[in-house]
Length: 275
Image (cartoon, rainbow, N blue to C red; front, side):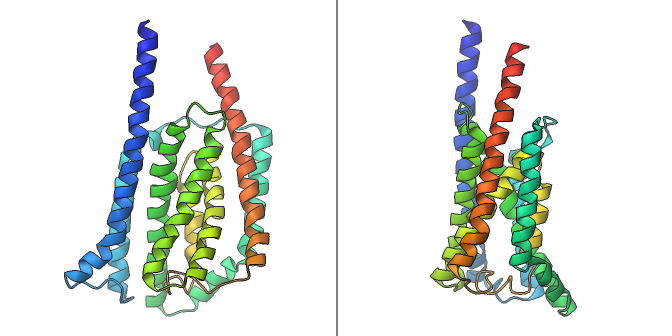
């Protein structure tokens, strides 16, 4: 009887914990959304694109990311790697290969060369913007939000897949924030689409490798581009056919990888129950 009561208490604590985490996520993103206009009202303009303004935004982004990290510090420090099957490892390799094809097609590697041809101040500004986006968004979405969703679906057979897909949709939707930066709706809709697709991949890497370093590095690599500070960070609109052919296979491969990881996690749970 006591064991049953303890399990019920544990379930209740987890339920409160994930709801609290999601509420904190909303609050942190709200702070991120309003701090620039709030400081502008006080006479400090962080939208003028100077090195000082971008450095200030980097500082705030890292500070908010640190808050996210502190809230899930125990989970990040857990030495509890997911035991991946050979099937899942192969899928991860294929996912990495598909991403490299996508990266080449969107000109990620050429963007790096373009940035490095700029003057030192412009290079530093691109670096600040890319680091701010990568660190803050990954700690918020793949850190705090994904952690909350994993707890919310803890009793589901497809816990990792559901958490990964929903966190990716949230990640995509957050890019509507760029509407306040004078970007067009058509451009933002495309950003939301490919950010959601990339979000599934980021979630797969976060879950399978049990750390945030790889998603942060890849996120930085994508955002390190010469036009990152323009109109919400877009390089203009692309044909939808091109985007669909690139990002749908990427998202599907990541979803299949998460599905396989769920099977691995289920096997691990059964083995632990037997012990």
